[in-house]
Amino acid sequence: MKKEVLFLIIQFILFSCYFIDIHILSYSFAPWVNYTLLSLVGLGFVVIFLGILNLNDDLSGIHSKKGSRMTFNGIYQYVRHPIYSGILLSMLAYALFTASVLKVVLTVIMAVVFYYKSDSEESWMVEKYEQYRVYKKKTGRFFPKLRK
Image 1 (tube, rainbow, N blue to C red):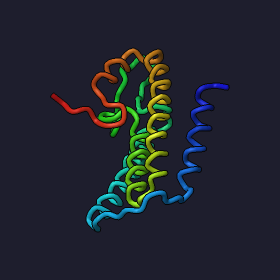
Image 2: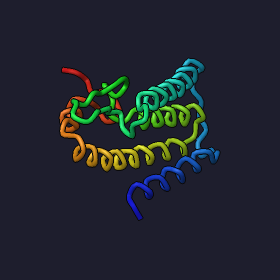
Image 3: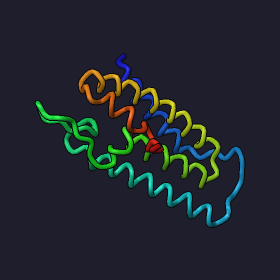
Image 4: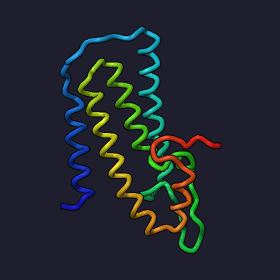
C-alpha cells in the first residue's frame, strides 16, 4: 500500500473518531476563555480557506510556470502547510472548548500524522523544485517562523 493512501486512511479514522463524544474528564473554562476558543476554531477555518484559495489548480502552495522562478503566494509566504495548520488549530480549540480529553489526544495524534505526511510531501517537493530547500529554511512547517 502506498504511503499516501495509508496517511489518508489514518486521517479518515482519526476524523471519524473525533466525532465520538466520550467525556473522561469534566472541566469548564470561564466564558471569555470559551469565546477565545471558539474564535480560534473560526481562525482555523479561515486559515484552511486561505490555504485552499491560494492553491488555485496546483497541488502545492508553490506556483511555477515552466522556465520561471517559483513564487510563494498568499498564506504560503508564512506557512508551508496552512491547511494542516488550520485543521489542527480548529481541532485543538474545539477539543478544549468541549472539554474532551479524547479529542485532545486525537488532535495530538493527527499532528503527528500531519508531520510525517508533510515530511513525505516535502521530500517530493525538494526533488521537483530546487528552490524548495530555500523556502523550507525561511518558512515554518505549520506555524510562521519567528523572524530574527
